[in-house]
Length: 243
Image 1 (cartoon, rainbow, N blue to C red):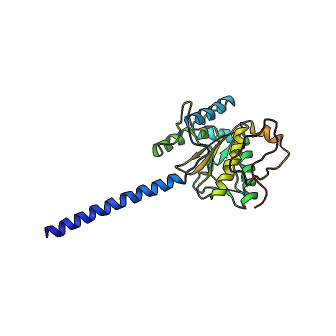
Image 2: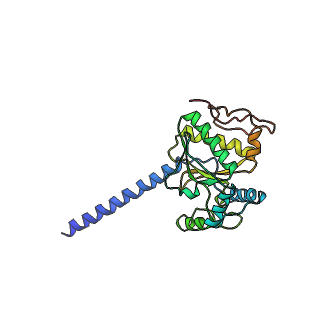
Image 3: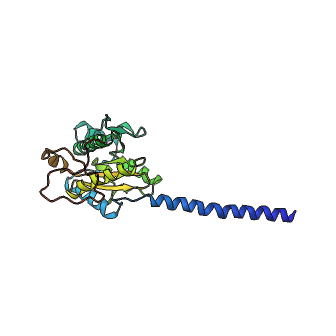
């Protein structure tokens, strides 16, 4: 009997020893597949908040302030279409953003659709301080609701676009698109691993820049490493065209 019990215990211990390396191996593989061009950082949060301060935008405290900004046109509704879908769980009252952020989302989603004939998904847009505090209780990686590193979602200038489910070519296309926009000072992006999304703060300069552009985005499919454009460049060497 003692032999049988000892054998059973030994077998269980062996099974545990075998399982643990397997889980560690899977975690290692997940990390191998995570190659962000735009890693979240303290510096990035500071840059996002600096732009909000430059624009003198309020951090929206609650639903009352949110509805007031909608009513006076400071926040505009994000409407899904052929090139853009919205995460079903996103509260309809928070499917809003600043007008220039909406221009950016529409421009990017249309360029993405022309390239891949697929929609890009919007997962998050404007938030209130109240919502951000609640999010922080469930997600320790979420940005604070106050301070110099507060979430830029609170000003309505930021959206999260789905990264999960994109293939390597699609991720690379998004990274190149955002690299160019960042290099000319129009966005501050991060790639969030927990939710596998592109967190993108859009500068208030986007609308002015957009008004100077007369060339549709063109495709650079063979460029593995994007290069920063010359200061006088007006062509948008990002993506688009047809697949």
